[in-house]
Amino acid sequence: MSTMNYQDTIPNNVDLGTDRALQRALEHWQPRFLEWWKTLGPEGFQASDVYLRTAVSVDAAGWASYGAVKMPDYRWGIFLADRQADRTIGFGDEMGKPVWQQVPGEHRSTLRRLIVTQGDTEPASVEQQRLLGKTCPSLYDLRNLFQVNVEEGRHLWAMVYLLHAYFGRDGREEAEELLHRHSGDRDNPRILGTFNEPIEDWLSFFMFTYFTDRDGKYQLKSLAESAFDPLSRTCQFMLTEEAHHMFVGETGIGRVIRRTIEVMQELGSDDPVAVRKAGAIDLPTLQRYMNFWFSSALDLFGADQSSNAASYFATGLKGRPDEARYADHLERDTTIELDRPTAEGKPASEAVPTRSAMNEIARRAYMADCEIGLKRWNRLLQKAGYDFQLKLPSARFRRSIGSWAGFHTTPDGEPISADAWNARKGEFVPSEQDKAFVRSLMVQVTEPGKMAGWIAPPDRGINNLPVSYEYVKLA
Image 1 (cartoon, rainbow, N blue to C red):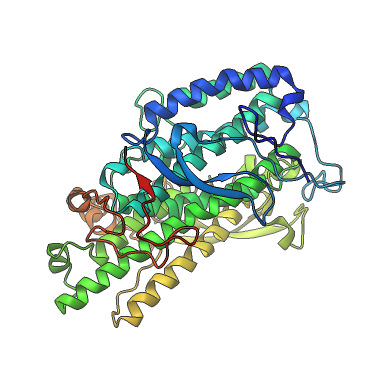
Image 2 (image 1 turned 30 degrees about the vertical axis):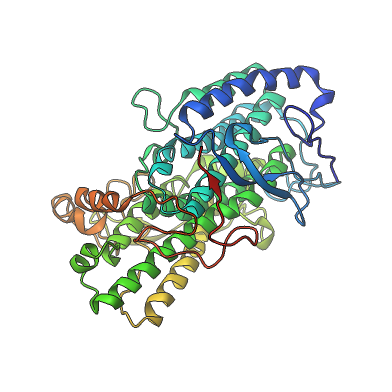
């Protein structure tokens, strides 16, 4: 088991102290990170004491400690899962050979781009969410927001370490750029489109942490299979923290639904207008938000057929999520059926090489995972006696990448004309009126144990503390 050095300026379990040049480079980057955090991190709460968990180990049985800390003083660090002796490459043309402890020259540029793209998403989400504290529905939720934020900051550190440690000058320059791009910036935006979308309300935040962070889970699972062992070990530990982010999304949406059910029962009606007037979020609006964020996340996997994805698999750079569950780890001469659009926008099955469909394989696993939360939320509605069922839109809906880019469909995947899409867009995704209504509910609640009127309280508090605990002590 690797030893955690928690006394250094940068907590780590990578023996940073033995590499003075690398340590100096990262200590030079650290104040720039802190300046970014203070400028574009959570606005208005930098001096508040927040009850946060902090990574202190990579041992799954007890990897974190809890306590009050001011966010700029949070102990961000560099933690890799323990090295597995004699690990070999588990897929592709290099299968069975020893994994790489250094970057092979022929893969240097591609690996750097994979790491940069993953790293770019981490600070992007912090920037997207920086103003949400001003409209928090409770101190419990405020603390969860900040926990997500500081861990995204640590995930940025994880990628920056790899860039500094293994990619020389090019890596150092890329690490600097990760702090220069900003979410939604017209001239210098984040790399992936979803991470430039504004998050102006807590319903969007819950959708983001459920759908977009779940995409992050599958990207990390794919990179955790990599033949580049330091990247694999980094992603293995990041997945430990990512689970909480998805928990925030799933329970947050569930609590919104529970409150909506309470209001509908009080009213004796599920009429959306009446529900809105009573200060809750109606079910059709929830569905439209779901349509938007789920379809946005699908594009993050890339094109359904991709020569790059085939190359990543063949060379061992990036595998399938949970590669061990597949029977064939070579996939040299196999095919998979994909839905491809006809000229009329109808789906037609086509066999394509499995290696070129790696993005789609990961996307399908992601979609099946997303369904788990839907089943839980729909059970709430069914138990309360309502026929309304939330559902994921078709994978053909609102796509801007891959075979279905440029085709207009309903959420059910039925083709429609561009004119019909524009006329009915407000039925499918949140309208400006929907967004304005949801924003109107966003009133800050900071009395311990109290909740905003549009969301139900959680079932339990954090780390065995009561829901009424003062999770954030406002400065």
